[in-house]
Amino acid sequence: MSQTMTSTPVKTTMIVGNQSLDVAELDEIRLERLIAKDEEETAKLMKAAESRGFFYITFNDSLSEKVSSHLRTCYLNSHEFFSKASDEKMKEFREDMTHGYKRAGIESFEITRDEQNRIPLPSPFAEHAEATLDLANICDTTVRTVLHSISDILDPSESLGLENAHRPDGRSDSGIKFVSGPTKASVADVPDTTHTDGGSITLLWCDKWASQMQTKETKEWLWIDPKPGCVLVNFANYLQTQTGGRLHSPVHRVSQPSDGAEDRYFVSYFLRPNH
Image (cartoon, rainbow, N blue to C red; front, side, top):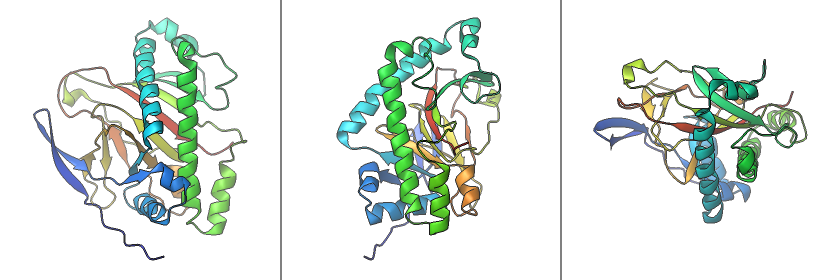
């Protein structure tokens, strides 16, 4: 069946507060269509994977409502957890591990899938474990659906390698991560967080303007709209390497469009290859 894919504009201009922002135009991919192996949706996903490396995943109404409810709980949990005294948070610190509590420029707390049902969660995540872990499971299903959809298009040898490297029964550092900040009184004080992600696929929620991406072709910095009702997705270094650069791991950073400190919380999920 022949499909005609329309080209997505690179950027648009949006007024946010009193700022005029250049904002990336990213494709929206419907999760239920990927699950149904819809050819047009899969082709749109592959186009995003090879060009921008960023896109949005949207959910059906019932799943979107559940995700929104879980996110509200997670943002409240994050605020309470990161407001604790340093010695309380340091009880969750893990040496030489990606998960647990970390403080390196930004504060974060991560729960891996391997440990989520074995290690007690700290308060307030423990009191809301059902919402926290259900969101983690929804995230895992989402990233694996994206991986399977991409695998259907890749060369069989590449596809087999990616599937084998991300077996659900294999041990990995995949997990859900809660992040606080950074936020500064002045934009000039915001640290440079330019990076690419080291895993395979990343999901990111943040209800405030906080992320920028660098375009693949022109290296221009564009803001990413924190659209409600969907999740931002990007491919990461492992998939770029394993596909010889066909899948793009985009350069991005955390920033803020204007002066004024405020609480900003991120909820992310990282699919990482098996050990």
